[in-house]
Length: 96
Image (cartoon, rainbow, N blue to C red; front, side, top):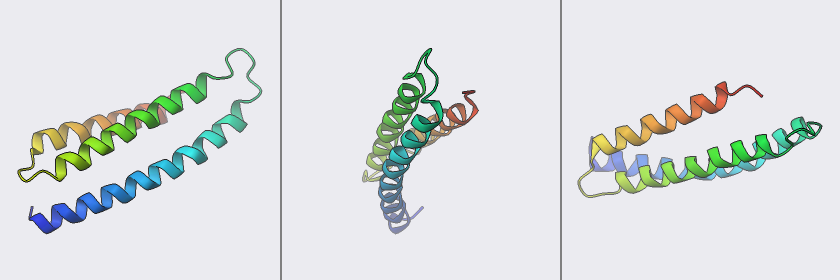
């Protein structure tokens, strides 16, 4: 990859973090409305989703930082992307 390609990727990653923040707010509002009636554990879904978004934000920040380095450690980038993919798929597969 060339430096301009990586710089564009970093810009796109930063924009993605903004989108993640917006999606976080929307998703929390949505899940709150869906699970408001569950009296046995009303905060469970909110806690799980909140942790997912906190972890996602950290992963994306770490990814952006890794890609901004003068010498990019692609093994680290791969590990971060793999971790984000795994947590995303687990979140989507979680039964409510």
